[in-house]
Amino acid sequence: MRKFYIKFAVLVFISLGLSSCDTIVSKIIKKSTSGVTSEVAEKVAKEAAGESLEKSGKKVASRAAKEVGEEAIEKAGKSIAGKTLKELATSNKTFAILYEDFSQRIGREFADGITVKSTRQGIELVSKDFPNSAIKITNNIISGKGGSLANSGPVNEFLNKLLPNKTYIIDDAFVYKTDDLGRVISCSADRSKVFKSISRGKRDRPTQELVVNSLGGRPGLDDGGHLFANNTGGPNELINQVPMSSKLNKGQWRKLELIEENALKQGKKVASERKLLYRGSEKRPYAIEFISNIDGKETRTIVENIG
Image (cartoon, one colour):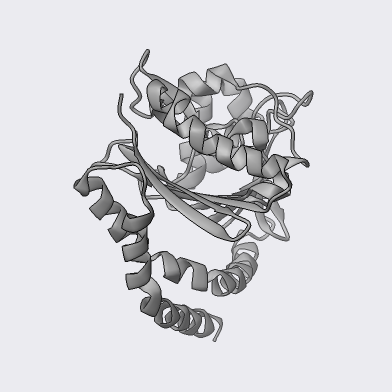
């Protein structure tokens, strides 16, 4: 019966969203101010066609998340309590991906020191060595807090290795969605919520290097560009960065960031979205749509990741 209600609810929100798709497609081209190529504009328009479905389905998704959370707890049971990531990596694909990455990138000691617990929300992974490294997993939803806080230690390493087809909810304000290759394809944030409540440390250079080197970046030409600026609360982990042309990062992208930054300083309500476009299996986006909603007024700008 539970599964029936979830399927029915999904059908309802899909039917509600279809009527506004055409409007979104037309607006996305008209509001773009960057003079991008027709190829990029057409791709973004197609991506936007499903946007209304996503927005109208938020209540349904929230309800469904509670349902699958209950199922995850039932399936997990007490069998994983107190076990380590290493012990579970032999029988679980998700744990195996994380264990292999941590072992190779950070070290075997770090990987072996991660414990897995069953909680009321699903499954929790915690590192005994890095106090900021922890996440909770409820089926396809992963939640946690960004690290690199002012005077509070390192980054959250679980946000430096992204799992495929997941929705990450960070600091209860940033939402990132990954595709089947583990690439961030879209993200959104309530910028006003974190502007004064979260203070990040300076840019984390090792993570920025990881972004460029592991996501198909161009050493010497690309920066680890933040999707949401870290000086206004954006996470310093890989989840919030992409290989970005240094010229773009310090030029047009920074100008767009300053519009949001100045609005936040003025006490305006700011919500942000980013939509990332890729070619084939490449991990470096060739274009990003920068969406800002300031006091209810929305602007969209498509920028190409070149230079």
